[in-house]
Length: 366
Image 1 (spheres, rainbow, N blue to C red):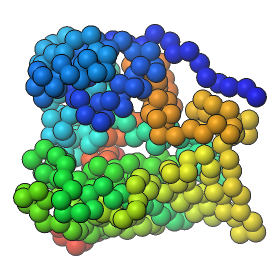
Image 2: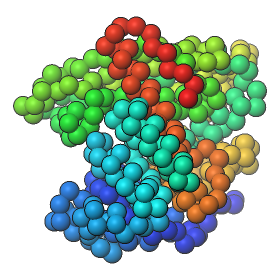
Image 3: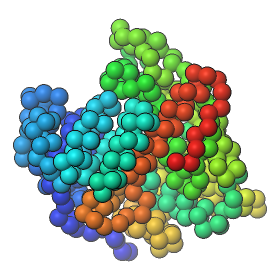
């Protein structure tokens, strides 16, 4: 039995904006990648001090002071409305930025930010970390090589239940902090990113409908959606259906993608990430993750031998390692950049526009 586990190389000095769940997740993966935790800023001095101590950052600062440090890498893990301002300031200071999705709460702002980052030679990264499951890369490789044949149909879902009841509340529910879309911008963005990443094709047009199940939460009016259903057409001719919900009882993180090619189908389930179902007319296969038999891209991300399960945190670690490598001037295939974050924001705009108008919306390939 062999293992590809490596001792992390020395990573960059980083600053963290935020102190919630995603900031903690980023910090764990930053440490795994060898980063030096230079400074953390949060919504106030007390919360920043608590988080800095708990997570191991050298200093607690206010956001402006942290951004003025011009650290090599800045992580933006704050409420959605603040992403653009913080990321732009960091880029203009010369920092490479890893920004939580959504990159912006509308497509125009996201595109402008992505263009500025690219022009500065700092393409940034957005943690669409499900790309970093080895079996996702295996599915992508089979389609890219032509083994699966031309893409005919796609079907996918991303279902959760953490906002099922009317007394379930979170800052994302309010458009003031979270933006005009919740379920789609929060988790549907992961699903459409996987559709395009794995298929190698672009969503060309879509029609969508949304539903807000609870019009009020914790005494506040809710203007963001709980669920979204959409039909899509791909530029290459494939068609598909996608379902996104944060009110699906019993579903905790049910991200599933199935793509049917002319010769075989591939199906990935995030809650069972060690396997890939491959369906053929005469027989079907259940591929288990084994770096000895996978495509090179999938094998690269297999940090443990076959039979030793990899999961969400391993995918996050692999994403972070790639992001830091790119920040230092290396190349890494498949890293989701600000351009991918802008693409997700454009698709979110199209979903909201379609739901409002009841019509198909042309998205385009950019």
